Length: 149
Image (cartoon, rainbow, N blue to C red; front, side, top):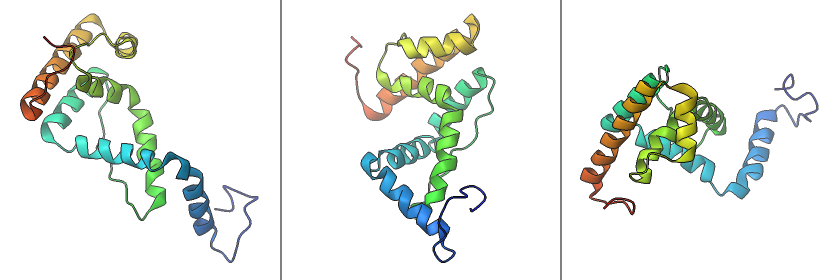
């Protein structure tokens, strides 16, 4: 710890505890939203159907998606690797979660991401996959979107 933060005052050899308390105070203003995000992504991608769709989207991007790890409430250090993983796959997550946003696949951000990574055929495949995912959501939760007729 001393190598990473040379100016840290070591209070009885318990630097990790000091850093833990400081990070809790620092993130208090977020009211647990960061933790909720990490937990929600982990739970959402545990479902086989959703995980399969996520993996197919990732494969379209040329990425072998890793399993999102569960954050441990009592281990503050477990949050950082979870957040790093989210950042690594943020574009894929954005495209995946766009399926929750209704029928409009032309969201500007999603279009930018697809244009950045995919050929026209790849875009068609992902768009078809998102449509299928939307249908699954409708059947499972019985909802209709405000953009659908």
